[in-house]
Length: 313
Ligand SMILES: Nc1ncnc2c1ncn2[C@@H]1O[C@H](COP(=O)(O)OP(=O)(O)O)[C@@H](O)[C@H]1O
Ligand SMILES: [Mg+2]
Image 1 (cartoon, protein in one colour):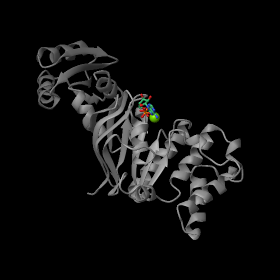
Image 2 (cartoon, helix red, strand yellow; image 1 turned 90 degrees about the vertical axis):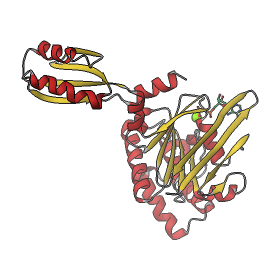
Image 3 (cartoon, helix red, strand yellow; image 1 turned 90 degrees about the horizontal axis):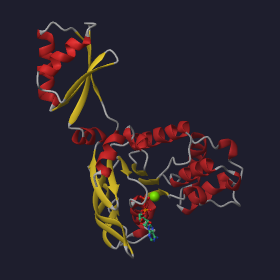
Image 4 (tube, helix red, strand yellow; image 1 turned 180 degrees about the vertical axis):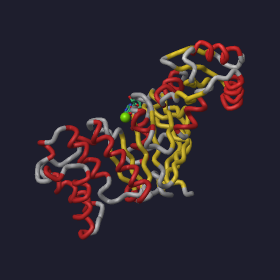
């Protein structure tokens, strides 16, 4: 697959602050990449460089093969950007509709396509009934939705979204995530999504990168990151026998687990190298005539993983 975004040895220095510190990262076409990190980590700076709003101190970014320093105009033609202050970048003298029309024309979207696309975006983002109103009368959430529509108006191959759902309610946030998912899948658009919200990336993103103090700490699929940083895994077993202390005792006496306890009608145990040890634990239970009703892993959420990675940096 072709790389859609290539970040190479990127560093950005603001006087004494190193906002981005030697970051290298590739994002494939049609991928939804989550760029995750706490405040001041360097997310927005990276996106601004990718969108040609800032120049790197060292290193570079290329988007769809265009280098931000050598071909900034081409970069802009293939990218869409929802900036971090996206809610405040509209023309208040124009209606919501006219704002989209204006930016569509700036991007040379053919007229016959433009009207259709505006309608579709307004409808999807539930802005249709406010189409003739000035953004000045909009709440922050509505303004943000209009910015999102604007970033997609020219159907860009690559979309950079800086905290896209920061002022949206949970239902609208979900809708926006579904929209991104669909656009990546069907339209093969690439998304680079900055966020400090794990709930945002957990299901949506194909891969995530953790950035902290300008340094890219980890990159991987959410599932793999969870595994990598969660060497001790937790399982719960439901047994037919009402006396769970027996089950707990059998599991403990295998000597394979880090801990075992009874919790809410289940035996809960923690184990390292679960793949090899769990079959032995299950065998021990069966050999003692314990009937297993249910056996499942307690999966940590990405937030736990993230705190562990970022906290240790
Ligand atoms: N124009 C600027 N001048 C000076 N420092 C800046 C500028 N832009 C960002 N920074 C600093 O760079 C660091 C990274 O900022 P930013 O990329 O906005 O982080 P994030 O988006 O992850 O919150 C912060 O310490 C911020 O204060
Ligand atoms: Mg930011």
